[in-house]
Length: 117
Length: 117
DNA sequence: TTGACATATTCCCATATCAGCATATGATTC
DNA sequence: GAATCATATGCTGATATGGGAATATGTCAA
Image (cartoon, rainbow over all chains, first blue to last red; front, side, top):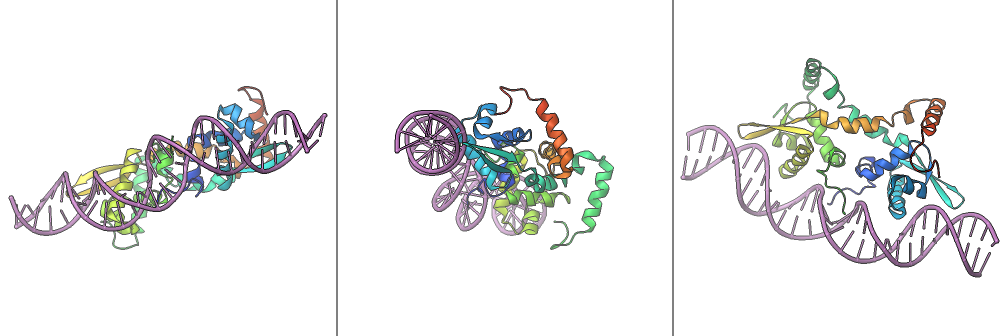
């Protein structure tokens, strides 16, 4: 197997820095393809391609407006990522001893196979 | 240019589902390579490879313990990702009109090139 | 040193990427 | 329909992946 396609899920789609930039831009409102291209100094074909990936994983939506196609953010698509990353929040937020407590909790809930290794 | 290497940053490293599983497991405490392999039903060489990637992007740390190498999570490495994703939080959290207000704010701060498109 | 266990590395292969460029498709207006 | 603007797609080339299997390296113990 090779690497998962970028269209596999938002995690893969968003691994590409330019696509993150595009999403950042779209936070401020919908844009046409050329609009994105001009704002970010990307070339039109690449913008189209990146937007296609983002659309496939549900991170943007499109709307036809005359000759143009207006792309807008679909922020909800990032919620699963947010949920996953947030589960690690305590590892940089809480004080060390509270973290230790938490880990103790977790370990007392062991279940698969044998405990530890 | 090809796709960014998985070792380019945490975003890329974490795009691989198995690596996320490994991090999830390490949340519960440090593990040896074989420990990870057994818990997740992966094969040892792949675990070593994935852990290598995770180490290179700073998401795990290692410690030698006899024949074993104990890997532990370095949660802080995920903070940049968390920060980025969190900036989209409002798009699924807040009520629609508050969001609208927020967007209005953003747009009145326009700056690069010409406004809109 | 030798043996045994734990981990890391190497090679192969099918697959996918992304940029750049050219070109095709779409939509609008004349 | 033809010209035009906007967007999408196709192709190439350089690069990287990730699993599998084999093997190398490391570490300890007798």
